[in-house]
Length: 400
Image (cartoon, rainbow, N blue to C red; front, side, top):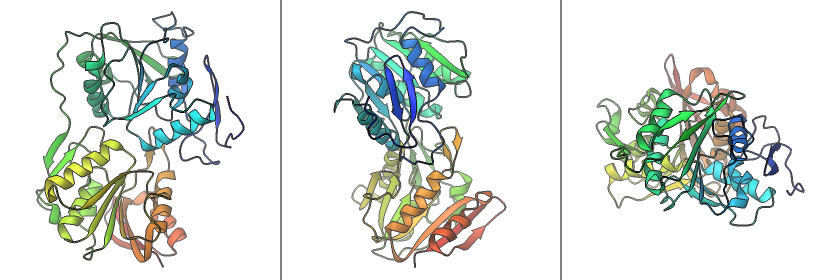
C-alpha cells in the first residue's frame, strides 16, 4: 500500500486483503464521513471466511469474474483489486473516488474495470457483489440488466446496513434472480445471499418510466418526462420542482443556461420550451439522471435540438469554462446516501459562481429551513427572495 500521499481525510480500512487509506470524492480535509462502513467490512470478512455468517467457508475468487454493483466510494473494488473486479456504478463521484483510492493503494493501472449503470454489463459473472443502493428502483433495473450474465454457479452476495435492507429489497432479489435469504445483523449490517435460478422468468425490465406533466406548471405543462431507474421522483413531479417551474426566469436567445443537478431534466427542458434559442447544458453526477435528462429533452424538443449532457461533479473546475454561463438553475440535494450534508449544495454554489459571467444569475429552489440565503450572500454578496411558500423558497444571486 502506498501511503506517500495520504490525504488528511483518509480513514484506514483494514481487510484480509490489506489496509487501505480511503477517501470520498472530492477529497476534503474537513470530511468527517468515512469512505466505507460496517456493511463493506462484513461483506469482505464473509468472502474471506472470517464472518459468522450462514456460508462459513471463504469464497474462492481466483480465476473468477467478479462484478461489484453499487460500490459507493470504491472500498470493495480497492480491496479486491488483485482479482480484477468490474465495478458498476451510477455515481461519477464514486467512480472518481475509486480511481483515487486504487491509485493510493498502489493498484496497477487497469486493475479494475469501471463501468457505469448505462454501460453494457459483462457477458458472464461468476461472483456478483451488491452494495444495496438507496433506490429500490435502481436495484430493480440493475438486477434485470445483470441477470443474463449469471449462471447456476454464480455466487451472489449483497450487503447493506439494516436500515437499507427491507422485505422489498429481498423480494427484488428473489423475483429477479432466485431464492434469497439474509444473515444475522452484525454491527448494524446485514448480508443477502441469493442463488441464481436460470429457469426463473422475472418478466421485462419496467424501466424507464414515462409520464405526462400536470397542466398548470407553465410552458412544460402536459409535456413528457422520461425517468431512468434511480432518478429522483421517478413516478411524479416533486413539489419543489413544481414550485420552481412556476417561477423560472426567461432566458435570452443565445444565453447559456445550466440545469445543475438536472435529475430528469424537467427544469432545463421547461426553460428550452419557454426560451427558444437558449443554449442548454444539463449536468448531474448520476449517469441515470443524465440519461433521463437527455431522454426528456429529446422527447419534447426533438432529436436535433442542440444541448449538452454532462456527467460531472457539479460545476467543478474543468466542467465548463469559467465565465461562460449566463444562468444556472439549481435544486440542490441535501443527502449523500444516508447522511444529511450541505457539502453538495456548497460545491454547486461555488462552482456556479466560477462558471457565471459577470451579471450572470444563479437561481435556487430549496426547503425554507435549509437557509440557502446565508450561503449565497456569503458567496455572491447578494441574494434576493424571488418567491416563497410555507415550505419552499426560490432565491436569486447575481455575480457582480
